Image (cartoon, rainbow, N blue to C red; front, side, top):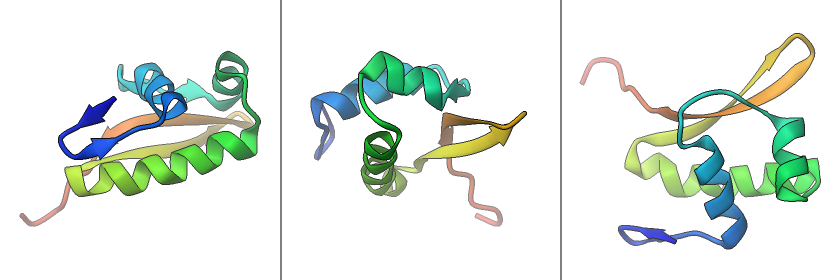
Length: 80
């Protein structure tokens, strides 16, 4: 999969398909559905953020009730 000049690995494509609805997704559920470890998911998220940030998108990680969630979000720059 590629967007503009960005190219994504198969796992990154799967992650983006999960996150594209803009809702928060439990990290535990993502690792199970993708068949990867937490550290591997974290590494993919880091690489995805680097690719998405120049396009005005990011992936946030939030904690709630002792659980972690990832969410695809739009970057809003105040004052522009």
